Image (cartoon, rainbow, N blue to C red):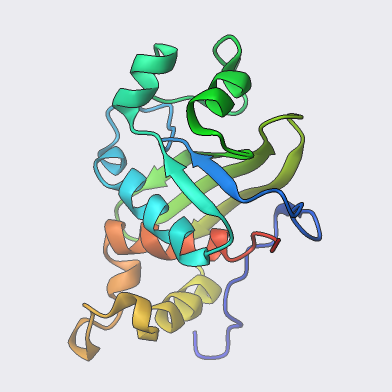
Length: 190
């Protein structure tokens, strides 16, 4: 493991820079096909916290209850048919320039923990894709273990101490925080 290079997100579509007007983004609730997934108990909060850490744009977060009230669905996938007038209704409700879809395609909460995430940042007016990532992050790989160790030693994970070394790859919640951080670090700047 010591000789491995730290993991980097590579399966992504970034544009060089976000348009200057792109300053407010609606962050949708995390979607997964498994509506009973234990991940849904904490994923929305973790992804919300990690996108805010990037400080690229203002974020407006829709809760599953707000989604239900507006669209009749608590969560939506970027690859399934969207509710009628979805983007225009989001713009009207939020005055946002973009929308961030986050989908967990697979999740394994037991060792080695893994998380497969697809995320897309879409221009709310044009429907154009500004950034996308589709990545499997698996704690069974040495490069992920190295990156997780570096992540844990950062100030972002202050609650973890030397006594809890390796917690990032052992805790589903902290591993999700690590994965979200790795993914959102690839967002383009404005």
